[in-house]
Amino acid sequence: MSQRSERRGIHVDQSELLCKKGCGYYGNAAWQGLCSKCWREEYQRARQRQIQEDWALAEKLQREEEAAYVSSHSSSQTQPPQSHSQQSLATFSKFEEKKTNEKTRKVTTVKKFFSPSSRTAPKKVPPEKESEKQEKEEKLQGRRESHGENLLRDLKGIFTQPWEMASPTEESHEGKAPSPSITRQSSIETDRVSRDFVEFLKTLQKPGREVHKQSRGFIESMGNKKDLSAEELSECVQDFYQGMSDRLLNHFKGSSEKVDRVMDQVEKYIMTRLYKSVFCPETSDDEKKDLATQRRIRALHWVTIQMLCVPVDEEIPEVSDSVVKAITDIIEMDSKRVPRDKLACITSCSKHIFNTIRVTKNEPASADDFLPTLIYIVLKANPPRLQSNIQYITRFCNPSRLMTGEDGYYFTNLCCAVAFIEKLDAQSLNLSPEEFERYMSGQASPRRQDDPAAWPQSGSRVNPALSQIHHNLKLLSNLEKRQQQVTEGAQNLQTELAEWQDSVAREVQEILERYPLEIKPRASAIDAENVENDRLPPPLQPQVFAG
Image (cartoon, rainbow, N blue to C red; front, side):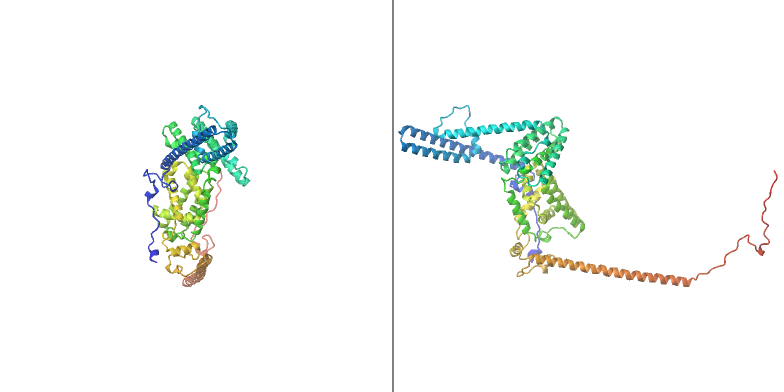
C-alpha cells in the first residue's frame, strides 16, 4: 500500500529527447538516439567501412582464384594426358567453379566495382569455363534488351502527361488487385496529387520544369529498385531530398522558406506515387513489429489513468470530447500517404492532449504531464500499424521536419511513448510484480484506485468479464439513484406549484373581502333634459346671411 501511496509518475527529461551528439536537434529511437543529420553521417561512415572491407575481401578472393587457376594450369601442363589425370582435373575444376560461385554470391554487389576493364587484355579462359562465359554473355544481352525497354518507356513518358502515367509501384500491384474500389480510390488520389503538383510547378516556371523532370526520373528509377532493403530505399529518397534541396537553395539564393514550400510539394508527389512499394516493404520486419505492438497494447488494456498518473478528468464533457478527438487523430494517421500528413495527425492529437490537461488543471500543461497522457491515449486507441507508420515517417519524411519544430517534438514524444509501452513493467506502474503478473494474465482486474479497499486481495481471482459486468451494474445503480432523485424533484415541484396556486387564490380572496367592489350610478350628459339646468344659456341657432 505504501508503494501505491507514493506515486511517482512518468518523467522524461527534455535533454533525453535531443540528439546524443549534442547538436541540439531532436533524436529518434530508430536512429539510436541521433538526429537524422548525425545518423546519416554515422551511416555513411559505417557504409564506407563496409565498402572497404568488401573491397579487401573481393581482392583476397580474386587472388585466391588466380592462384588456384595458375596451380591447376601448371599441373595440367606438367602431367601427361591420362584418363585418371583428366578425371581428377575435371573434378578439381568443378570444385573450383563451385567455390568461386559460392564466394561470388557473398560479394555480388561489391564485385561489380572490381571487374576488369574492357580495355585490358583478355585472359586465357580454360575450356571448362567456356559455358560459363556464354551464360554471362546471354545475361548481358538480356540486360541490354531490358535497358532498351526502359529507354522506350522513358521516351513514352516524355510525351505523356504526368497524371496519365501509372506509377511503377501501382503497375507491380496490378496482378494482386485486392479490391477494385481501393485501387480506384488510390488511383484517383494519385491523379489528383499529380495535377496539383503540376499546377504548383507552373508558378515556378523554369525551375518548375527541372523539378518535375527530376521527380519523374527519380520515380522511374525507384521502380527498378524493388529488391532493396528498407534502409537502402530510405537512403535513396533522402539523397534525392538533399540534392533537390541544395539545387533549390542555389536557385532561390538561400531562401529557406521557398525551398521548404517546394520540398513539401515534392515529398507529397513522390511519396504518394511510391507509397505502395516503400510503406512496410517485404524486405523489412515492420509487419512483425506491428503485430507485436498490437498484442502488447491489448495485454495492457487494464492500465488505468491513476496508474499512469495522468492529470485528466474524463467526467468533464470538454475533456471527454478532446480525448475522443485525440484518439481519432492518432488512428487516422494510418489512412494518410504523405509523411507530412501523418505528422500533422500526430501534431493534432498532441494539441488535443494539451487541451485536456489545461481544462482539467485550469492551467497550462507541462511536458511532464504530456508524455503520460500520450501513453494513455496510445493504449486506449491501439492505432493500426503503429510501428510501420513510425518507420515510414522516419525513413521518408523531409529530415528538417523531424529535427526541429513542433512536428519533430511531438513525433519524438510518440516514439518515447511507444518505447515506454514496450518496456512497461510493474515498477513503471507502481505495482508489485505479483499484481502486475495477475493483471497481465487476466486473473485479476484493478478497480477504482481512489478507493484503497477496492483493490483485489492477494487470493482473489476475478474474471475480467465479471469485473466489467459488476462495473456496468454499478453504473446502472448510480443511474437508478439519479433517476429517483429526478422523479422526487419533479413531484416536489408539482406539489409546490399546487400550493403556490392555492396561496395566490387565498390572497386574491382576502383582497376582495377587504376592499369590496362598489358600483356608482352613471353621470348624465351635459345637454340632457334637466330642470336644474335652467340657468344655462340657450343653445346657439344657425343663422343664414343673404349675400
